[in-house]
Length: 100
Length: 223
Image (cartoon, rainbow over all chains, first blue to last red; front, side):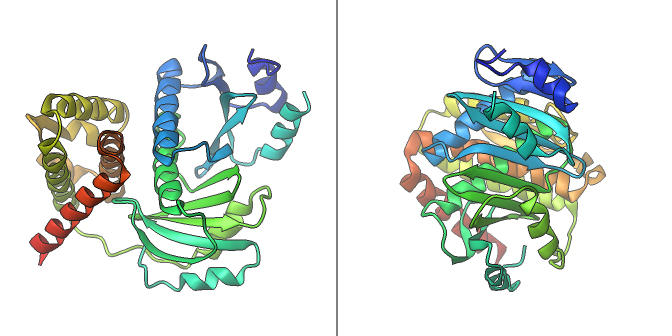
């Protein structure tokens, strides 16, 4: 649970591959091979990137590949994210989160 | 991506405010147009490379597009050694797909031997490291590069073919078994990792001067 966002509920509601929190305590639900090590890597690279840019440039970051996507969301001073199939509608997920 | 490609045509799309084609190797702007933030080079290069690491960490394949939504809506499309960043008027679902389609006709640069590319990239990183170490602690750099190699080597074969001896990167001849994109991607991520450390050690201005010095040396060597 991250504030009002329940990772399991979010994953199940949208049939996502995985949901995760990058803020402490780092946790994930679903199929994230590598588990917390993956979260540490993502967290490190985001920290480095924002340090290098000198600001928090985005509240959402959507990385798409051929058939999947990773979404990083900054919400209520915390970072969390999800892995989904490419055709998953991110707007619906964000709407769900922001309306919680 | 060849900077001679008529990217100015992108500005005919009313949804695009501006664009910047940024080298993923040194973060320099190769071409730009329209209205872009002052730090568009950093935004595009750092966000692009971060996205590549995230996709690799989550094992979802090679990135097609990256979209950042914040003060600006920015779509980044990786292409060979560059990132094309487009600043959009507004964010809509799947706008990045539309942009990718409009870039469909662009062609990749001519390929060359992967082994040579691998070795050349390692030589270039060695030149850069040599410069960074001059005014800094070699042991700190050694530890940092080793941690970078370790972090980046979790997946893929390239990481198993490169090692650090002293402060010199050396590559294994088995690189012939790899494909060019795989080598380019790994070496670019390693370069970004090293440059980010330099930014925190020396600041942006000095780091850029050092990187540009090395680029000049590389250009002179290649003449």
